[in-house]
Amino acid sequence: MRATLMYGAGDVRIENVPDPVVKHPTDALVRITASCICGSDLHPYGSMKPEDGPARMGHEFIGIVEDTGSEVTTVKRGDLVVAPFAISDNTCAFCREGLHTSCAHPQAGFWDGEAEEGGQAEAVRVPLADGTLVKLPVAADSALVPSLLTLSDVFGTGYHAAVAGGVDERTRVTVIGDGAVGLLAVLSAKRLGAEQIILMGRHRTRTDLGRAFGATDVVSARGEEGIEAVRELTGGHGTHVVLEAVGHMPAYEQALGVVRPGGVISRVGVPQYEEAPIGFGSLFRHNIRLAGGPAPVRAYIEELMPDILDGTIEPGKVFDATTDLDGVPAGYQDMADRKSLKVLVKP
Image (cartoon, rainbow, N blue to C red; front, top):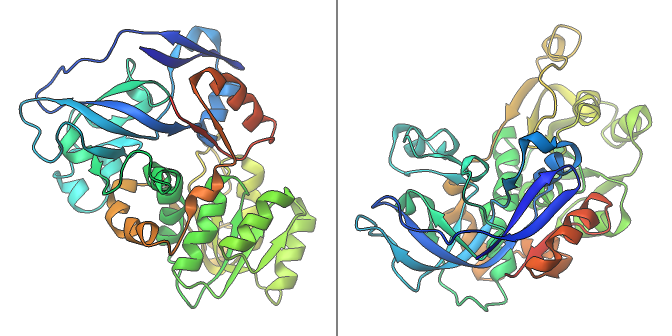
């Protein structure tokens, strides 16, 4: 079959690889019908060293079950399924607490840790299929597929940011980042009833979509100018919650600048740093809390799916380009160049 491999920064190739096979009785084989390129894929695309490649790519996909191991009971051949970006058994103590990204099963983990598997491909072996895969009540050619695909990562991640930050109808929210996760964090904050949602982003087509998703204000400035603009919109105080969907230090520093005393910074952008201001002069002095982390999207799928199925929300609007596997390398470059917001891949 054909699959996407990254050989180093800027070097993405489509190659023939061995077909996946059932290795464990809890596995399922899935023929991929829709996948996509993630904003987090752009981190290695910008920095991967050649000695760390090649790496199979892709952790968001929908597909049709082609075969299952002998112990799989919740899905069967022919089912259309969506896979979260984390593999989990959905039964361990952490999964039962809604923290599927910390699943204790030895086969659990992230797709990026599965050396021979990836979602930007024609097929994939899914470990712990009963816990990981969720059956979809639509056909593979449904117009809802793009929105349902966001349940595998970006919508669940934006929603996790809002939930971890404690967003409700009494909170003012700032969202930092106008990528797909940031825009769906806006949608999530709106869904949870936030009274004011300030989107910090500089790309007009993206911030216009953010307004459609529920942003009440847009701040295009960055740094001190951006911080001042947010504070002017909030009576000088800042917002109760900041949803940081970028992962770079300037975004964290911006979050510090716009969060209200007693507020929460909820980070879901994969941090590209290990050290950050957290002491008396930053978080501690004003009782500011730090939340977020890898989103346990499996915990949110059943909650969020009905609103997609009945048309209440359309998170799939974040996809502004579609390609086949041959177009994936160009899709990476277009996303890196900000020519595309998020690329849908139909193998």
